[in-house]
Amino acid sequence: MAENEYRISLSSKPSVLITFLAFRIASLLTYLLGLLFTSNFVLVFIIVMLLLAADFWYTKNVAGRLLVGLRWWNETSEEGESIWVFESADPQREMNATDSKFFWTTLYLSPTLWMILGLVAILKFEFIWLTLVVIAVSLSLTNTLAFGRCDKWSKATGIANGIFANSLLRNFGGSLVSRLWS
Image 1 (spheres, rainbow, N blue to C red):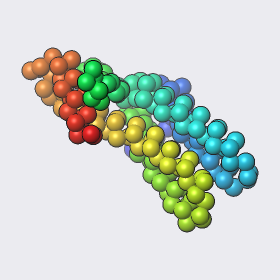
Image 2 (image 1 turned 45 degrees about the horizontal axis):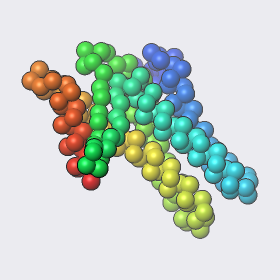
Image 3 (image 1 turned 90 degrees about the vertical axis):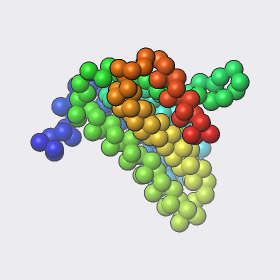
């Protein structure tokens, strides 16, 4: 059964999952093909940056919410303090195992692959390409860390949900994580 959980046909939202995977794969492939087959760094840089930005936004605002029921964002208080806010779906809602496995595997695999490409760029003395890799690692790692903390927060609030109101816990959790990341 475990091998069947990695079939897109078992997804409850296949179009969301395919789009999520397409952005991740397209940015990596564009980088690799640009590195190997062209000397036009500027063109590759622009295309990969657009794909990375679209992937970051789509993962944060669409795929995370629809595939695993999680969403995060950052707000700035009037005092200028950064506050991380986490949101999770109704704990009674059953998440699709295929969607969840694809989401979390891809979320953790992506920054790892970009880090490997960064190491390759360093070893080949391709420092101009390293700038693009650093941006890619930053964006993908931010989503990975934020969703990881959002998942832990949602599990903690699921336990405490009977005691406190969800909005109170969300604000407390967001300000707590903000202090931890500062």
